[in-house]
Image (cartoon, rainbow, N blue to C red; front, side):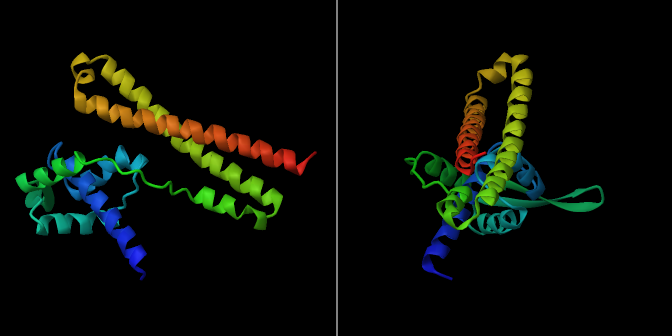
Length: 198
């Protein structure tokens, strides 16, 4: 494995650690709870799998940033994780650091770069399939936005909560981002169609 690949994996795990710590600041959670929380929030802009959550939790426990408790629930032991004081300090230090601009990692752009090796009808098919995926995620985000508006519209106290407002900001960004992707790739499809001719 190359040093570059190792560095990339380390950065990914560092970010995963911070997401876990941030979610645990909201309250204690099992690994399943963390996965569900990520899917409904950070999962829209940072990919995390259950397979990567477990090693991250293990490391956070070893580092003293997270505390593990086993509780009896329904005749079974359930592992519940909570953030420690040291973990909270680590998270608050990280979240207050300057934001680093990262390069976009869009596999569609990489494929497009080499599209001269793909037959025109296949190009069109690939981009249209990608547009369908974009629309699926976009629709899900729009649904979340609508649900949040309906729920928060009834509760002014929540609307005034800075934590809620910041999380809604990320949802707005995600929605705008997928609107942009849909528009851009929609124009790209038209461009390919014009190149193909009647």
